[in-house]
Amino acid sequence: MTVLLAATALALGAAACGDDTTGAGSSPAASTTASATKDPAATSLTVFAAASLTETFTDLADKFEAAHPGADVKLNFAASSALAQQITSGAPADVFASASNSTMKQVTDAGLTVGTPAVFVRNSMEIAVPPDNPAGITSLADLAKPGVKVALCEEQVPCGATALAALKKAGVTVQPATLGQDVKSVLTLVELGEVDAALVYRTDVAAAGDKARGIEIPDAQNASTDYPIAALTDSEHPEAAKAFVDFVLSATGTEVLTKAGFSQPL
Image 1 (cartoon, rainbow, N blue to C red):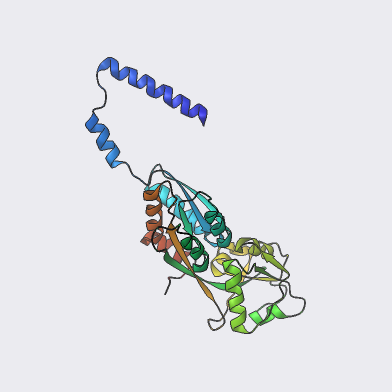
Image 2: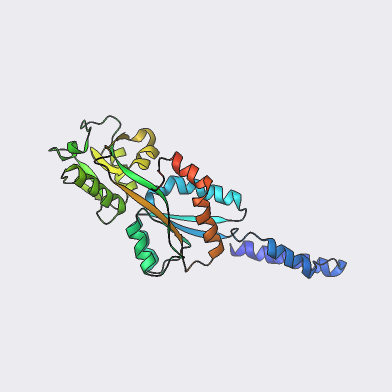
């Protein structure tokens, strides 16, 4: 990086000397116009997003960069609770997209969001099992059967809290064999055949393709969570942060998220 910057500086110096010799330097008016028309989103941007947004936000970041040449979106995916803690502890970020209102509230209560966060999608739970479903899981009640190894997200993580809400609605008590830090780590245990089932978001089952099979949960037993997004007050690029939030809320963002299985908030 230092070498590239040094080479650029030398090139600019040479160009400047050439301008002095020919008398064809840029006019102040031209410089002012170029500055005024520069895309404020064409800069580096750091987005903290829930692990369940990995596929969709990777796609949206690519589309955002294509729409704003020069933009460089850096994505940090993890459990929303972990990301909220990082932000309130001073981690540099421009945008936060959470998998629950409660984790976003931690950041908002700390005065770190610009305005009121916007809820952009909703997600619900699904039972994930290995493709051959060796335990013969067909419902939430099956997760409580002796010998069935179940993985859940940790309770403080949105996917864990939402899973527990679904189990409570169904009147089912599960003793998990393991607890994961985020939804992707829990789903991986299913894909590797290390557990018989896991409760994850339906979008993550869809993203797993043929590595996992989904067992739908009846609406009367299921639980959902809303996803809010906000630009952050400590952003070094507030205009770019706003532009990315607006992009997620746009028709393009809605199309990408809906195709992945997210539903629109009520």
